[in-house]
Length: 174
Length: 223
Image (cartoon, rainbow over all chains, first blue to last red; front, side, top):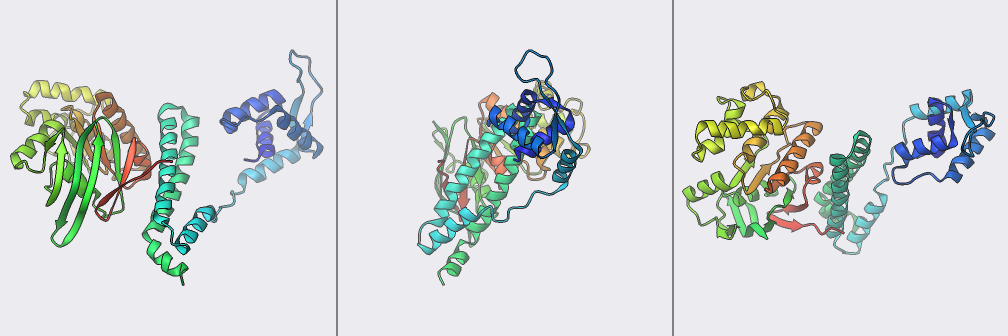
């Protein structure tokens, strides 16, 4: 998650105060990992320094923070480019697990048991996400779906690997 | 408390072994997913547990009683009175309306037609099927037909619901709706569920899962 670009995106929606930005970030993107105020303001400071946002003069108000942040044309261009660019696929996402499997086979350890343990951990997480889906609203449900589809893809990889363990064993023990 | 159990179950189709000493204990009220690759023996295990197939070796126990030693009539009565079923393709009777399909287990158990249909209709609202009572299976979408099949599986308040790939013929969103209803209804009724699936997303609705590989059952140990 890119905090600067996400905050820029929120500012493209409408000019905001730092407090409102943090609230919206935490609601839609933080999900249990709220953004510290310090990080909000340091990020806004850098975005302003780089010409991507400007600060309006302080407004009279009750709270200590009444500065409104407004996105610049440069900032809006950056948000557009970021949104349109596909996220880099990560073909080596499984590298740690794959390394463990290969090493286990090389060292004559029970690779299938390790993969079963991984499968159990994945299924447990999928169960938790399914519960969130069943009890939550649309935003929580869609976020849970995102996690579920990724975990499901990992599990398919685990299934395929389990089915080919004997062949892989022969390959790595040459 | 264990409600249904397989002990050392073996079964071969001709020379092809399907189960080679399968052990499984299902606790009362739990929702258990039986996973495994195609041809691993998971559906055969479900059919043995449900008294559809009789193992060549080993034992099946339900509620403290041997099932595998019962004759065809005894197993048939058990399936009718204690078990419910949902299969991959709803397997509704095409000549009957949706409500008659749902009422079928009650009619077969001797309930008179009107009370049976009344009990069946109560499930239509519960599963979001209002207005579809008089339709025949050919006039239902895949998801609707599977919900009708679910209602039929639960209408007689079975102790155990056996579901074999219940979402296998549905798209993922419809499949999730069916699983959501299946799990929600089973929990509300206190029904034990044994669901065979190769889909992790379906298994994630269960309390626990086991894997069948080469005709044997492996329980996953959760971290």
